[in-house]
Length: 323
Image (cartoon, rainbow, N blue to C red):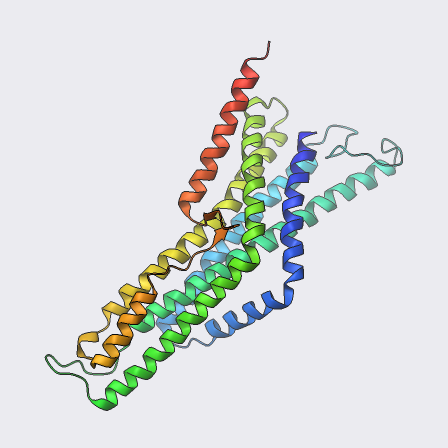
C-alpha cells in the first residue's frame, strides 16, 4: 500500500510538471532554440571549452539520474511476491489467472518505465536550461575579462578614440547578452517555479517515509535495493535543481568581478561609467525560486534533508511508543 502511495505522490508531481511543459511547449521550445543558437555560435577555443564543460556536467548528471531510476523501476518490478503484482491495484477481472496476470504485470511494469522516463526527461529539461543560463553567464564573464584584448594598454595614458569606440561596441554586446540571460532566467522562474515547489513538497515527504521504511525493512534484498535507489533518486532529483540554481546565482555574482578585471582604468570616463553601471546591475543576482518561497540553492537542499530527517525522527518515536 505504501508503494502505491509513493507512486501516487510521485505521479501527481510528474503530472504537474508534464502538463506545465506541454502547456508552455512553444515558449519552452523558443527558449531552447535561442539558447542553443547562442552557445553553438561560439568559435574560440576557450569559449568552446566552457560550453563543453557545462555539457559534460549535464551529461554526467543525466547518466547518474538514469541509472538510479532504472534500478528503482526494475527493482520495484522484480520485488513482487509470487503471484502478486508490483503495485496493489483493483482491476475489473481476476488477475490471479493466466494470461491476465502476465498481461497486467507487463502493463504495470511498462507504466512504471514510462512514468520514470517522463520524470527524468522533464527534470533534465529544466535543469539543463538552468545550466545553459549559467554557461551564458560564464561566457559573459570571459568576454568582460577580455574586453580590451588586442588593444595595447598604456600606463598613465588613455586609449585612443578609435580604441575607445571599439571597446564601446564590445561592451554594448556584453550588456545586451547580460540582459538576455536575465530575461531567460525570469521566464524560467515564471514557467517552472510552481512545479518545482510541488516536486520539493512531494520529495520531502517521500524521502522521509522511504527512510522510515528502510529502517524497518525485513523483506528480500531486491526490495531493499529498490527502496534505497528510490530514496537516492528523490534526493538526487532535489539536489540537481538546487545545485543548478545555486551555481546560476554564484555565476551571476561573478559578472561584476569579471567586469572589474578588465583594464577599465585605461578607458575613457564614458566607458568607465558604463562598466560601473553594469557592475551595479549585477548586484541584483539572477536566481530561481520554488513557488517564490525559497531560492534554489544548496542551503535549500540541506533544509529539505533536515526537514525529512525531522519527520523521520517523529515517525520513529511514534513507532517506538506502540505496545
